[in-house]
Length: 162
Image (cartoon, rainbow, N blue to C red; front, side, top):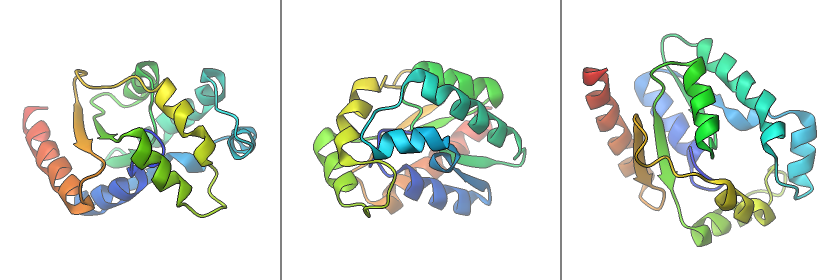
């Protein structure tokens, strides 16, 4: 989880592969109206995200053997909604600064649904999950292999205590 450009999809895919779990790309489940809003540079509201979060909760439930979901989960209420759908859900928070997020989003292909003009809205909406149970914070600026190693080590310890 984290703001646009933090590397959710890359780490999520690597983590799912390493654990032999299913991978769900949260962006693939946005409503067409939400995609149009984002492409037009309009930030999504809580109301826009409500159905999306419910759909993602359903996706989490479809994979009892293990699943990795790449999802911004910017607000605590969003994370609680996902936790309600999948008790025991844990989050890897990819922490990134505004400048690096802006550079990464700006470098994406033009067809990506999220324009760089919306990066600031992500930071404005973000409620840090630090201090919440079941959250690991990883620096987004680290090498992908280091991020993966940290997440795998944490999941191994978390699995022993769950």
